Image (cartoon, rainbow, N blue to C red; front, side, top):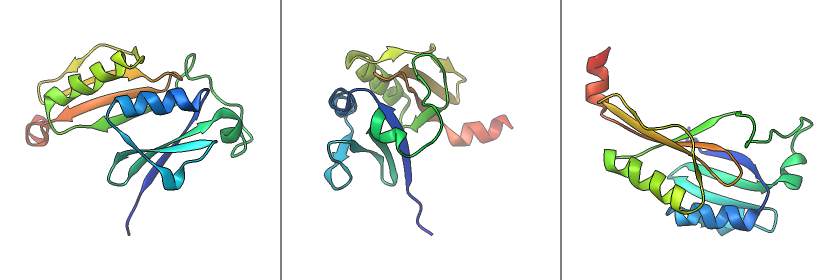
Length: 136
């Protein structure tokens, strides 16, 4: 079975969110984008669907969480090199993102986090899998 992951995120300003994620180096897929939503390609089979809040609301009966005030999830993006953690988070902060918590350095794992313009929490993570297995 081939599995694709689409993370749906409500956004206040679709244009601003598109600009933010393209400044981080991600591209969009026009096939799954229109005036209400844009598909951001995070990885080969991983996508963030940025949906205007009004459009997002049509998919749920629950109240939307204000991500600037509460946390529903932390979206982690794995990178290949330790240096890429800092590169990605520094790009996010330069593009208007806000810092979340400081760096976590476990030696075999390194991460930093940021908030996108809507307050959604993102984390860049690098892990030396071989060293991590030796820790257990």
